[in-house]
Length: 599
Image 1 (cartoon, rainbow, N blue to C red):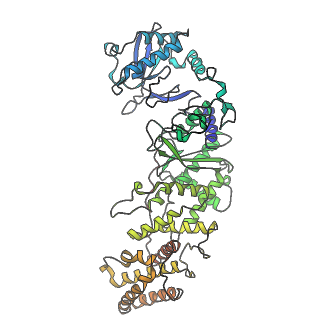
Image 2: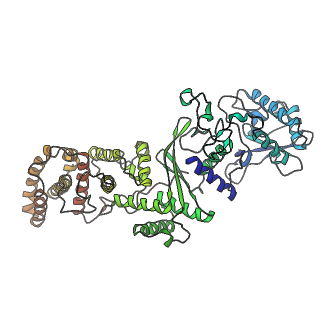
Image 3: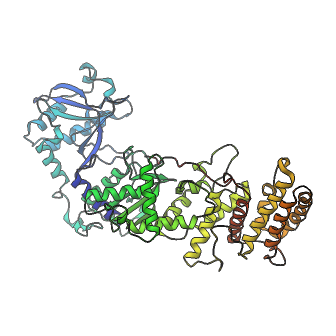
């Protein structure tokens, strides 16, 4: 389904004549120089065709015949290549002479019978060229190791754009010289076609190999079956392989104008819409991008996304917010992660825009806490950063996050499935380790438990409260509330003299093994209460009532240990109770802005 959806998207891009999307058999490549040839093959001029408008000249993106997939072998491209192949000159390649010889022999074999003046000029050039002419003729030094194309003097089109060159390339893409007995049913189109032996490389995935990687590849015997070689194990036609890789490379392009790509952990995430027209698709992609990553620098777009989600939360179709949005528009989301020379599919989801909006609303509802621990809805990246170690005076680092949790959580949000159970365990582990009981971390505990209960994976018959629930009789929640009261009593009794509160010293033990620590804490609390009764009688009476109300609902004996779910409820109860004692919400609000998505 992934490849089929990408091929459909490629067809849409071709219809729209999207920039950088080449027709079958061609590829947008960075070209820096052109060699201007006379009809007899002599060099008229060498022109720098890079864009000089920026601080540094940038190569021009041209659609050229699709390059060969090189690993360690020498394979020449047709009608263009880098200078080591075209001219036999390189500062990096130690086999430039062999590469140039391969370029010359290839063009001798394919151009010798051609009558087109431009193609004959190229053939004459190659027959008369020697690498020592590079310095003799004064070719620019910064041309070395760049990509080069050719043009016939007096004409505007490049050599590879001439009708004769295009016809030549089409013939080379044909199958007349290939055994038709090797045809197989294409997994994308369902037609009997010759499968691509190697698929074009996919570039732009963060931390993958710079030369590109593959989703479909077979290069070891262990990956093959029934004696089939490479691409024949998963037959995809040449045209379909070209289409899906071209579409994916377009989606992964690094550009400030590309809003269809964002980085979530180690996953490079791309998304696109399948709609009746280009305008409808663009609108759907814009609002869907806002679902995944709220635009911090665009107030109007953020407001639009908020209104759409509020409307969906009320059970209304998104078309009522904006007539240009069709609820039935199908959205596709693909997350890719590097895996040596291959790519791993972190997640793949495809559904309607309305359904995705409903799942985003459900995600927000599962995490919802009162008082709200944020002013701006947190992204997946910001949520997962809450599970990494919080060092004094330093922001949490994305590198410390467990990447597969990021992928699994994104999948859960987009599919409506339960959050990964390891998310709860990791969050509680961090709460116990560093004592940073932030609103984001408590929201994650609440989200995991609330979603499991909503989906029928019940760990308790009692609902997970959004705000302080004084009617709750759940032991973990009550113990969290009691711990918060005891901490507040300590703060009030000792004032600014507290170097470390009971939260700093005992939170881990109190939330995991209550019976071992709460009797001690209660005795210390009574000592602090004695001081408060003398100095702040009214406050002492209020806190005494809170303690009695909570203890009255607890069982006769403190539990010896709390399960992981109850430790999550402990954190929620602590958060709810502690927030009632502060008029300022700064202690629980996380205003950390999301970093812009990597492009």
